[in-house]
Image 1 (cartoon, rainbow, N blue to C red):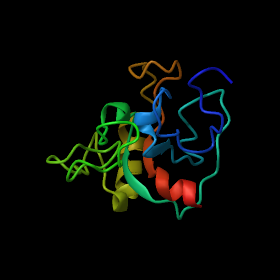
Image 2: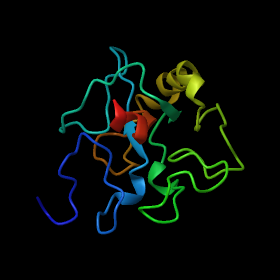
Image 3: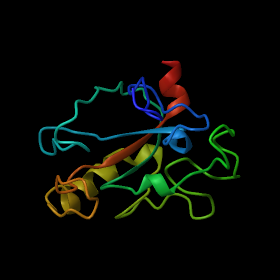
Image 4: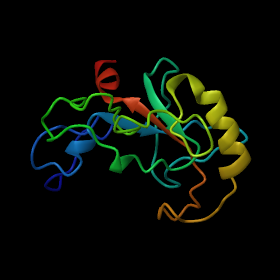
Length: 149
């Protein structure tokens, strides 16, 4: 595989130096899909069916910009080194918003899906630069729990 690539893409990105995605290895992003909103992050890449028991950290009714929401100071550092920081969700302080753009708390998936259907599922813009209309939602899962299952 290419240098810096994740050789096991079904697992969280390895948290070690030299791997481009190491600072995101504390979370996995997913989408909730159903018959009304069957949109995922990629229109071409395969996906996984995730157990309803997966540990949700937060969710967004659109692309949450989660790559900018990091907690660890270094790729190999403990992922939750900043007090109150939740990987992919918030850096502490502001917390969960549970309204319009999010982030939504783990127990607010139903509210997030309502917002997704109402405001985002048929946006068909390309502000996320994925070439698919940005019609997906983003659910951030705990990578440690994912790797342990």
